[in-house]
Image 1 (spheres, one colour):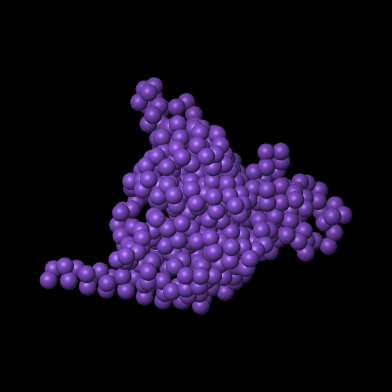
Image 2 (cartoon, rainbow, N blue to C red; image 1 turned 90 degrees about the vertical axis):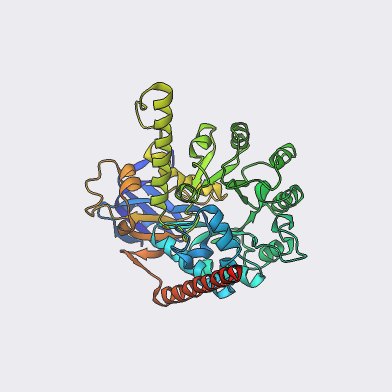
Length: 461
C-alpha cells in the first residue's frame, strides 16, 4: 500500500530535514519512503493514493511516555486527591477490585483515546497485574487498539496481609518476563513490545533493586521506575546502583523529584532518560517538575499523562503544562537573581514538541524506529487541520502546533502505515467500548465507596 500526502506543512523533527512548506510525504507499507517535494512525479509514488492535506500540518505521531492506562475507567475519581490519598485509595483499595476484564476494557479504550488525541506510541506502565490473566488482558487491550506501545510490566502495591512480605521486598517476577518474551511479546519489532516497570531504588529494598536491574539488563529491556513522591525505602541505594555501573539509556526515571544536583548531572551524563508528568506532579504534590534540571544537565526530557483518573489524556495539554511551568520557574529565578525577567524565553516551542515526539521515543528506546518523519522510519504520523478558527492564521507552524492544537484539530492518525483515524473520525467502533468502560468504572468506584463507608462505620462503633 502506498499513500502520498501533498500540500502540507511538514514538521519532520529531523535535524537534517527540518520543516517543509507545501511538502509531501510518501508512505509505502509500514514505512516512510520519502519526504520532500515533487514526489507526485517520482516513480516511487506510482500507484499511491494521493491525500491533499489542504494546507494542514503533518507531524510525527506523539509519544506519551508514561501512563497508567489501566485507570482509564476511573476518570475524575482521583482529581481532588493528593499523592498520599492516591496511594491509600488506589493501590490499597481500588486496584484490588479490578478483574482481568476491567484491565482489558480500560487499557483498550484508554489506548484508543490516545490515538484519537494524536498519540501513536504509548508507554503503558501497568502496575495492577496480580495475575498473568490481568497482564494478558492489558496486552490484548493494547494490541486490539492498534496503538504502538511499550508495555511496561509492573507489580501491584497493596498493603501486605499478615505473614506476607511488603511489596518493596518482592523482586520482579522473572517467570512473567520470560513468559511474555516467549509468548505475546516475543517479536521485538512488533507494535507492542516489552519493558519493565520496576520499583527502583525509591520504592524497594536494595536487594530487590539490584535483582530487578539485573533482570532488565539480562533481557535487554528498558527499566522504568518512579522516583520521588515520598520517603525512599532504601536511602542511598542509588549510590550502589551507580557504583555497579548500572546506569545507561536503558534506565528511565519517572518524575525524578528528590534527586540532588550531582545525581542529576551524573545520571544525565550516563544517558538515563526522564519521563515527567508535570500537570499531575503539580496537582498531587510530588514537587515542581524536574524539567529544568534535566535540561540543565543535557538529559532527555520526555512527558507523560500519568493518570487519567486525575486529568486529560491529551499530550498537547501535557506539553503546554511542562513548557509553562518551566518558563515560570526560569522567569522567577531570573527575577530573583538578576532583578528582571529573561531577555527572551528560556525554552522554545520546538523543544517542547520534541519532548512529545523524538525525545519521548528515546525514553522508550524506540527512536531508531519512530519520533521523526525520517525516511526509513515507521510511518507514524498525525495530520493536523490547521484551517480551523482556533489555529488561524498560522504564522509559526511549530508554535501553532504546540500552543493552539486541540482534539478538534486531529484530522488523521496513522500507525505503521495504517490509518487509525481519518477525516476526523476514528476507524474503530467505540460505542460498545464506551458503554463497557462506564459500567466497569462505575462498579469499581461504587465498591470502593461501599468499602470505605463500611470501614468508617466500624471505626466509629
